[in-house]
Image 1 (cartoon, rainbow, N blue to C red):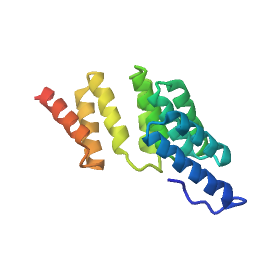
Image 2 (cartoon, one colour; image 1 turned 180 degrees about the horizontal axis):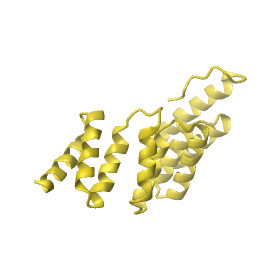
Image 3 (cartoon, rainbow, N blue to C red; image 1 turned 135 degrees about the vertical axis):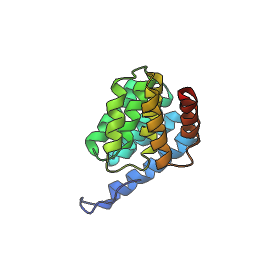
Length: 168
């Protein structure tokens, strides 16, 4: 989750931040969002990482706090522009707010990021946007690319079949 870094004065703050992040994530999984926010904030104060900012934004999004979620993602990008998750997340939050236009550039940035575990998600999200915008060929292409990235992605497979059914 945290990239190994050779430089820096001491590993202690970083190790403490990792522990705080772990506790935050556990609270998040248990849907204890107040505690999760507190631990993510403490992790960031101890040693700021793109992951902690992104996950804090994720918790804010669960509560419908999209402006704050986007702000945390922008902070994550400032910490590490190569980390793909915050780009995809910003696009997802924009969709949640009904913006089917600005989100596209954020999903494209996620696809261009060099440090990202699952390019399937921005492809899937682009498929959703294009399907909603009545561009079925573009939607099918991105659903298919999501499946190439992650063959077991059931939502993408259903979405691709749905769009293909409308094209036939």
